[in-house]
Every structure is written in structure tokens, then in C-alpha cells.
Image (cartoon, rainbow over all chains, first blue to last red; front, side, top):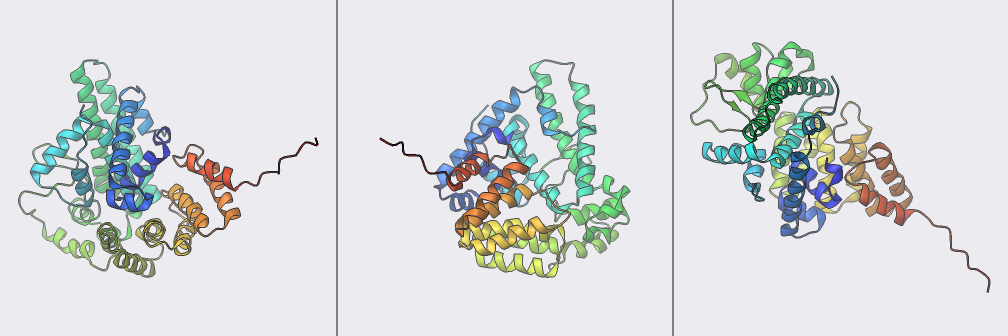
Length: 67
Length: 311
């Protein structure tokens, strides 16, 4: 699902969600203003929301492995 | 659906306890917002992967899947808006259940896969596991006495009563010199901007607990710290390669491959950087870093000089 996001948005979301980066850390890491980073996260989430809410396979996408 | 997400609350929920009022606010938002649920699930997966061993991850995934299947099957025949909302809530509950299962009962059945600090304190299981896990899995979900499932790190309204056994187990979990505690302190220092302190703590963790899950994960976080904060790509490269060379833990392999490529780029080692980006794309063709990888590959690939046609 993350692979469908623009890379800057996906990277920001992964660094924030998986490695626990704050907005300030993300800004320092990417050399972007904090507001830009905030905007990337917001846009990433909106894209994810649209994708998830319109995808009937939502659960399977989150649990891809077969038992 | 509001486009506003409670980012500050989400950030604080990842770092530590929320008050009951804050938790209610966050829970209300998360119940309606699939994107924030997805983000929290990413964080939870990362946390579980960083704390548990591979067998734990597989076990947790199986629990999540079977729980999901039951809940989804129960909710699928309904198509109303309320039912759809209920399905979304069920997903959240299932995610919480999986973490609860990981943190309590499921591991009790397989004490040999417990992380080492818990292995020593595995009996009697449920109470002691709860007390031992809470400092690590700060957001671990657990069923409450009122039947509600707490899915986010909730600060109890009143001090929690702890049994004598649990109290005896607690010092091992709260040991300030433990791998989990060092990792937590290092992360806190990093988030607060104290790069030097964070580096010292990550280094201490790596010296004192080689091979532990926290130590391996710290190689990626410290690598990024060197790369992003202190501008030391040589030290960063050593961290990423240390992670990639270690056995047993691969949850952050993609991040480590990216970090290695970035570090090589900053060191001006073009040929190795090219190989590193190619290795990333070979291992993760749909990586979210693929645009950056392709761009760098294009820049770094030597092109044959254009033939000049004779006049």
C-alpha cells in the first residue's frame, strides 16, 4: 500500500510510524521545512484513507499471508 | 471525514502514556480514521518486530489472521453504513487482540520464544508477563474488567495493583541497565534532539547486549542518526552493514538497505552505491524508495558516449 504513495510521502510515513521520528526529526532528515513534512504526512494519510476505504480487499492487504 | 489528524496525540501515544481524556479523543478519531489506524498498526508491527523474535512475529500474524477471519466473517453479510463502521471497529479490536495475545497468553504457551528478559520471569505467566511487558510494549492492548479492550497506551486513572509475584518480576523489567531500558532511553534522547546522548546510549546498548533484538534494531536507528543528524556517513554505513550482516532479524532490512545506499552515496563511493540501490530494488521491487533508487541508478550508471555522426 505504501508503495503506491509518492516516495517522499511514503518515506516520511515510514520514518514516523516505524522508527518513531518526530516532525522536527523528519524535517532535519529530509532537509525540508517542518510544515512541508506535516503536509507530506497529511497527504500520505489522505491517500491511504482513500485507498483503504475503496478497496474491498482491505483486510487481506493488511494480512497478506495465507494461513 | 476530517482531513485533520491528531498528530500530536499520535506522537505522544507512541512515546508514552496518555491521560484518559486524551485517550478518549484519540480513540474516537482512530475509530473513524482508517489512515491513522494503519499508521498505528505500522508502528505496532515495527514495535513487535523490534522486540520479538521471528517466531513471535509469525505467531502474532497467525493470531491476527484467525481473529480477523472470524470477525470479518461475522460482519460481512451486513452492508449498512453502521455495519461498515462496525467492521472498521472490529478491525481495530482485532489488531488490539493480536497485540494482547502476543503480550500475554500466546507466548505463555511457547515460553521458549519469549524475549530473554521475559524468559526468566515467565511464571506465573499472565500477571507477570503483563507487568514485564508493559514497560516495553507501552501500547499493548489488554482486556479490562469492564469488557472494554484498551488499544492504546492508557495511563490508569488509579495506580494499578500488582500482585506480589508481579512485583517480584517488575525489577527485571524496569532494570535501568536492561537492553529494553537502554533502547528506550536512547530513543527518547534522540527524539529530544540530544544526539550525543542518544549515540552514547545506543553504543552502550550495542556493547552490552550484542545479538539482542534491541541491539540489532538500534543499528538502523543509530545509522539514521549518523546519517541524518550528525553527518557521519562512515559511522552510519558501519551500523547499516552491521544490521544487514546480523542473523535472525530482518524486519528493518529494507530501511537498512536504503541507509547503506545513502551512506555510500555521501561517501562518494559511486560504484558501491549503484550496487546498493540495485540490491534494494532486487529485494524490494515495489519499495517506496524505488523512485529515488531509480533516479540514483540512472545518475550513477555510466552511459556510452553518444556517437557523433560524420558530417
